[in-house]
Image 1 (cartoon, helix red, strand yellow):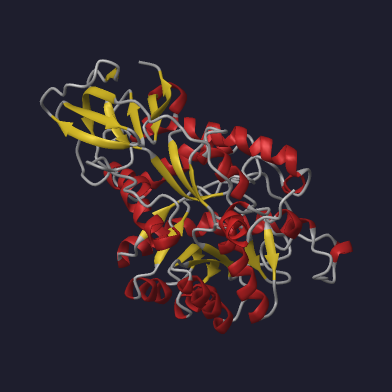
Image 2: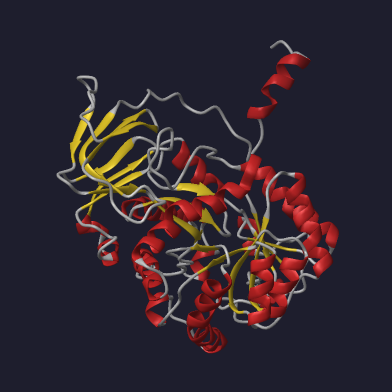
Length: 445
């Protein structure tokens, strides 16, 4: 067999090696789809349009008009009958690989967990979520399978492994795995759920490794968490200089870091170090909220209200969850008072019975926001946060809006959520059509 020439070898490099992209199978262009007689919530306004028609060609919206639209004879026509047409929902704090499995299962058989995650991805899409920002987990293969049409599911903005310190949130090592040995990574590290580092060099390397695998943004664990029983909410992990180093690496890659933090001191450290976004922040005080607003740092948080919103907790985790429940109303009051740029995510974890409450977690926002504000947050506003991924954005078109040349991620509802937001809580009944990238995944009309 003749040796491969240097030019041929170099040209083949992008397709060689585990974790690197392979050739994507060619797909036939999606046919045109015409939505007739729909009333449109465009993701930005506060009211539905009058009776309208919308033409999708390929994976984008081509035309919107109140006048009749003529399409090709082979176009799919969906008669809306005056129903609501809106952009697909966006969940900005999701864990696609961890949503259904409990922590022990999540660290178990990788093949089985991928199959479970693929099934959950389809259910997520059927709930109307056409895009998710994954906030930690070995999700790169699932994203690829969805993008290549092997699995039905939402667009995924992956963070890769949660980057934490010894004893930090996400460090779920067994006693037998302590002390940390870089030569023998823990179970969570082996599958790519977490990366445990305790120095600036290791932190920079971990950030680069996630970006090398295709991360669109990086998640740094700045403090304690609920589901890690040995990491109290008040603790801080990385120093300000360490968080700044991670932010610098992400900036070099033309993207950003978001920092997991609950307590005020941890949130302030993230802001001072140059983080573009903070996750959670339920326990931050007024002065920290004011700083966040002044620095124009994003808050990505969740309206946790009761035990119905989370997987069963015990011991220290249950006590911390009660702290979060009690703090949620004050957090949203601060966000509104200071005008913090606020995104919504569900952060549903570790339970097959809790994942269907993803939509209910969204409608919880009606405790502080109007129906229109809630719908804007889950569409166009969440899309603004996604756009911070800049050159690492895996889907650089327009998301979260209905306008010409935007991605055709569309939902048809049997009611008007601007009048009753609870229509979103029962997608099996009230969601008539689900389209992502111009492809119809559900149509009951």
